[in-house]
Length: 308
Image (cartoon, rainbow, N blue to C red; front, side, top):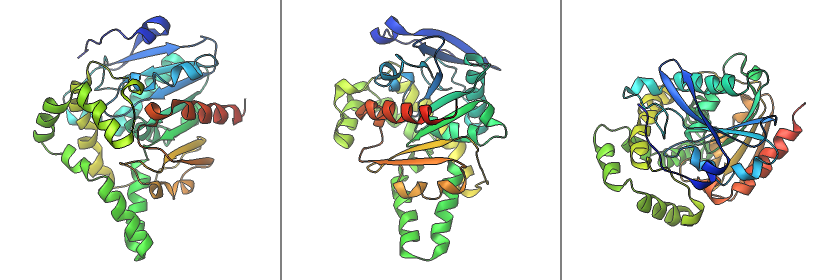
């Protein structure tokens, strides 16, 4: 299924749009900047589309070839109705399909947010991922296996700090229980899934002004379709975490005021990553809206630090 989107002046003026196929899935891909530049792929989460990065793209596209795409279920990309179609293993194949299509001869650098980061974590922990990904900057989206393992360790530690950290994350993640319910959350977002209400929510929760927020006209459909990400993966990963490691260099931008992911949830990341850099920022969950310059600056520095 393909959805119509409205005209966004910045995108119309500067992007090169095309479709990438992954089996029966069609992914809408948008490219910016010099065609011979170092490729940087941006991956959004819920309930966003590639427009999440509208503030970041201009800060990188003068130097890099920037690629963003609507992940399955969002924007102009295919939105299958089966929950199983949104399992992380399938989302990772979408990511690799985009990388192979846009950069068949060299690995890409990746910046990802929320569920975009979660699915890229799945991809970079696959064998041979370093042939496709040169670096990964992760924002507000942990590896679910790592998070579940950390939470279990906290409970088993018997310490106030360990148990408290796990309880804090459980409280921050409580909304996911509602998202995984049948019918009710779909009806809820049909009622409140408007641009006006969502911008008001972000202003109240994070102090982000409406002018900083760039949304697709498919917001309501995307909110509802994106619920399948939660239903397909949360329970499976929380109750059956796997041992997942990566040789891809990872940079964590940890937002200390994130309403969904507590900073302590990343404390064990170094156990699973060969090369890890972490920056704690006094920001909320939607950093691409509130401080795109921070993302561009940290991403640029991390990319430049990698071996040429």
